Image 1 (tube, helix red, strand yellow):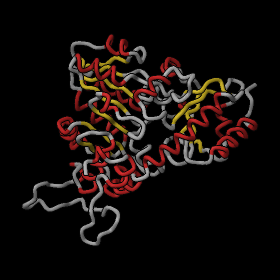
Image 2 (spheres, one colour):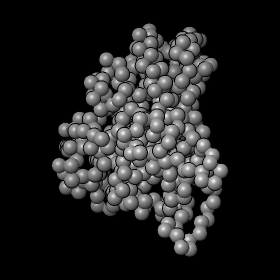
Image 3 (cartoon, one colour):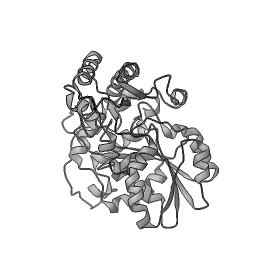
Image 4 (cartoon, helix red, strand yellow):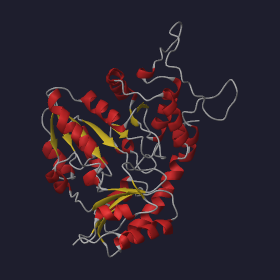
Length: 386
């Protein structure tokens, strides 16, 4: 059956599964071998070539979820992002980069593009006019991240895709915060979609992985470079990731329900200065979210008022975990200024609106009232700044 005609939960559960023809097991067999026969075979399989049985089949699931022709699984989100960027940018080329992106991606660009002779500009804002103003004769790639980490800003994907096509420029979008449950950039004209599969794809805070999906032609180009960089994922982790992805849609929808509820709760709280969540009517991105997303996602950020110590607030939490990553079934919080965006200069963080009081909140699947009670008690007991 054509996966495009199947429901989301059906794709998550069945697409890319390996049939157990020997014992008729209900889950995909795990092929742990790193060495395969090369005699009289159509495909010479090798882990670094991204084509072991488990790698190959899981990539089909990811492609189906993102409405793409093909996909690749990497060892981390940054392995996927760096391989993609360096596939389409060479010495003398120029890239237009969204200003509000994950700190690790920005650090990679600022630290390493110069070594490859790659030129780039960060946009002034998220308008298509700002992207267009950055385009140069040698621009080869436009890179966006929406919703953005950590302020949940949105880029109009359709407008960016239209702009890029008019200049024959390739587009790439980081879809990690939304997941394919909430958003499909390829349907809006974007050429390449990427994920830190560590996040919603894994969903249990125990897997590190990355993913890229696009047309077969584009994925062949990325594969040609990626196979030499060696960023493949071990087959055991691939197998675990397939297991986790079976519940992707169920998890994300449950997490999203909590995000809507907690965003409204925090928006009204006297200790909170501001809340960043596209599902709030007060968000400047609310209208765009309703157009290009199938929901508002399960990530939000909020800023505590100055009289509350953000460090002490996180330490006082009993249920919600102060933790580095996101998108697990357990709710987590962190300070972007000390984690995801710590590599940025203080000025760069300030320019992006990332203050020391900003807290990123990844909603899990816990009961809403328990999350609210934990936040309330942490605010009550946290040290007040003198």
